[in-house]
Image (cartoon, rainbow, N blue to C red; front, top):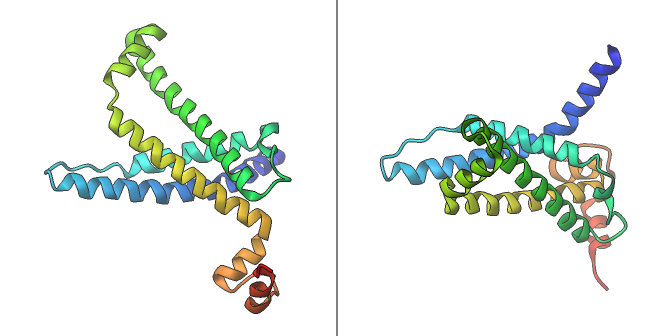
Length: 181
């Protein structure tokens, strides 16, 4: 039983950073949408949707990180890994969103073909593509920051941002190491 709790705690701590990042991101998107729609007299409150979406993406990131091919470009410059991981996370998230919609339509329409036809006919395409574009951008930013932290080290990032942690490099030595000859 102790091992189960240890595993749950570890998975929770691994899922927490992406879930927090995407909760803040989705909340900002929700706030923006709310402010735009308020001008037209439409009230919309869906911060719970932002929380659920963030938890879903956090879980997708956690699951995808366990796939063997996710580290394909670990020995290449960071940009390769960022683009690779962003693409995989996007494909996984896109697939999850599609399956989620199909499953809810399957209950109503009975067959996969009918549910898919209904989904394609009823989807609001501009809204769908807006969400997908934002998701690509947010996944890219998340992966870039995550890979940068992996390359620099958590302690050094904490020291650079908050002045805490175990890093001992001064900003002058960091500036010297970043100069291009």
